[in-house]
Image 1 (spheres, rainbow over the protein chains, first blue to last red):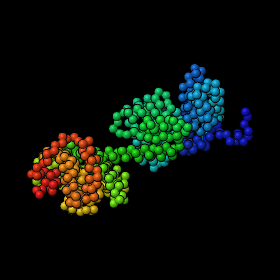
Image 2 (tube, each protein chain N blue to C red):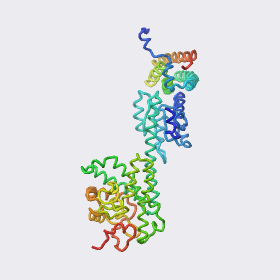
Image 3 (cartoon, chains in turn blue, red):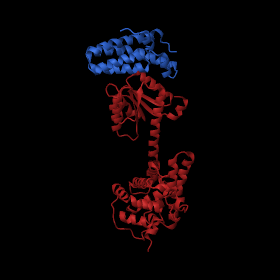
Image 4 (cartoon, rainbow over the protein chains, first blue to last red):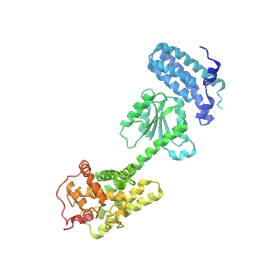
Length: 124
Length: 370
């Protein structure tokens, strides 16, 4: 299903730089440090999620997705947080079919934010 | 958070527990900026290890974590025997009402929704610090009182009884129209808190007088009476330094004036009637009732009935008539407290009039030949 222009305009950004900087009390050094931590941990979380999904360890999937959701909220990456929430919810409901679908979305969001931050990670 | 927070935090130890590396970094930064000493743990199990050596006053913990989650950690912290209270804040997701309820039920004091805002974090921590300060205040007051008691008392529960009697009497007065503008729940709480300080000045009385097993001479009795002034001087310094601290003012009134008598024959100032602060009039009854019903080296314990009769007989002389009437209303509660907090064998034989020493001097009218 495609999105209308109005819907796209109201979508939250992949990464809300202004909001994130505000959460860091305007401290750019702290913001840059946190982005660095985020870039270092997110690929590992992605890999751990894939491994847990492959072995259908739903408790582990739920736990990792929950953590990614929290991290994403802290970094002001709302779409990533929403995608992680759907994965967490599917794992909690033991809904493996939905889990695979939501995991694809989550992986896409992970790639999107990694691209966003890698391409222009300057926090200002 | 700003620079002014640093002085307030005063190096309080805070343990942050979260498996989210971004949350840990943010919390660490904000807390250190505010002047807290910070340690980190990635789950409940690690946190318990840290607690062994770090002794946090505040723990901020995520709920969902591997190994041991935040709720299990909170339960473990509460089950530990600790000399000081640990304020526990749970970090939860907005939608996680179940975790919030479970967390509060497990002993958490407060919760903070993720993602937290630094200003909300600051305010939650201030709430925690206020509670810890109150705990410190209460512990300090009772420790001071215990220190004074340890020098001359052979009973371990005197202070507990005094505060319980005072609370019961004050609670009764809450229902009296005459006292409703003075005695409220805060008054009751403060008298419970401060009444154990009534004899704090005894730390300044020489052992030769304080610990003398037999009768005091008139000169020794004059020295003993100085305990009210010594205690008053000590607390006056605190009252002047912290004029906004109502509990010090009440402690001062009690310490200085609990040996005054309604008819003006008490000490140290021979105050009369309502010149004597209400809190001191209440503690006067509590103190005498306890002295009468407690066995001493020089006298056996009076029964409750005998002690009550003496108090009724002193209505309008030693004691405020209203307070004696209040005593009559709560007599059974007084008896119950005496029985519950009894640490000495109760003997019903009254002491003889000629067995005077410090306490019997205070009660001289009760022993006077008719």
